[in-house]
Length: 337
Ligand SMILES: [Zn+2]
Ligand SMILES: [Zn+2]
Image 1 (spheres, rainbow, N blue to C red):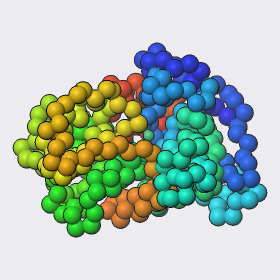
Image 2: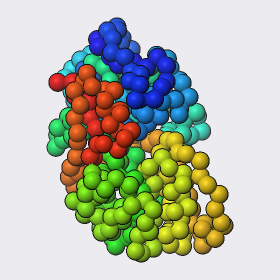
Image 3: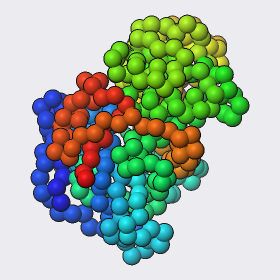
């Protein structure tokens, strides 16, 4: 198969991914072999390629928002057949036995494997996944539209969950979103459908601010600008630690600030008064499979419309460069057909 692999981390501007032929992966007894049709690009891919995340597998094929069709089924797989459409996300496999796995927190599993980081991912013609970690994709979504749901979408969903707001509490709640890329543009659609007012802070005027307006933001401003009201809760998707005190400064008492990224630049020190009043800060680490399944159902019900910019398979490096420089409106997706 043809695949893009990373041998040595480097700035994406140096085009470190190399396209080469390599053996098509072998499917084990509990796995599916998937012919990839689309693979979304994510900021985490940048962190893998540029070395902000430690090397787990080398060389590695990045990419963890994979849509494709099953072409081979392991001997012990009962619930998928050839040609089923599936999605493969970041959480590739967990141990099933640790204290986290046994208490509904498999996203924190000590032994977890991650697609496109510790096992090969989707910037390739084929990928494998344990059948129990593959997602069925609702028919409402075409392959290209579905790809960004698998990380940007699921992580945004988990961020909303970790705000602590549930059910009717969303009606009229004021949610702040800092950074408005792939995750932000899906998250706002869930929040709007739940009845919340959304305040978006993002540095890109042309693409991100315009899209935020289109998707129903109550207010859109620069990251340095304070929203005109106190926020009941806020999510930071941008990997910029300096936004933490900025967001705390406009967070109402008792509110939670959720940090949605796997990597963030250092958080500057700040006065206790910014967090006093029972404000909370919490990170989001990965997701559980139930997050993924619940999110896909909610996304189909709304329905969420992903705004996608596609890149042909021979332009994976260009896609990562565009993501790094905020040049993508919505989500970037590499297509293979
Ligand atoms: Zn575990
Ligand atoms: Zn991701």
